[in-house]
Length: 287
Image 1 (cartoon, rainbow, N blue to C red):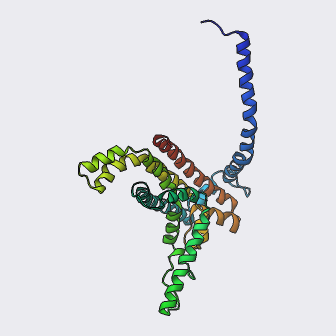
Image 2 (cartoon, rainbow, N blue to C red):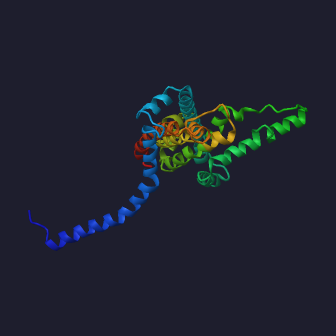
Image 3 (cartoon, rainbow, N blue to C red):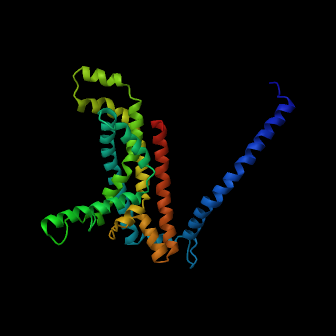
């Protein structure tokens, strides 16, 4: 095979070197601000400052009831919230995309804006509505004369679950709306022309097209629910301890940094694994 001219070969090497020079600064900044702190967390979990074996902190944390309870609570809350978001998000996306009503476009745009809201704002809104001194309890006590209102679920796991479903549902609705916008309406017209009822059209025509978007949105919601801290903290649910809350308690309240680092490593490992799943599903969905 003929060799490339020396000038072109040198130019190619210079271009590669130039690209490397431009890549190094952001990589260095990323390593300093993100990877280095993570490395410190991992090292602290393996070599605690107080001494001991490399895995002593892991053995102590894994043997504790607090860690097992926090892990179980985190998993069931995340799974339940994800399922709730999938069902509610699918119904809302169907209504916005296929049921004509005034303001449908405004609602779709509001969903885009909603994605930028911090989670604690939704929790505060629920507290104003259903908190101990919220509007709902205030109305009940005003009209019935009771000393206390009946709504006290916000400080329970069900209140945390409601807040997470309320906040994370738009993260499912958005990819579904994008998927529905690419759906061939001729299929819907043919199905309707053949006498198929709306429920059958949804089940046999719309749902198969929505499965990749549901998978991508559900994977993302699952990852975010596993790492959610603000909702649990602002609801004031003292009996609800998730992995992020356990990290906060160990590090800030108990000053047990090795245990906090161990829980953080476990949380990171679960999150990275699920994020990898989200990326795989997202690629298949075209996200």
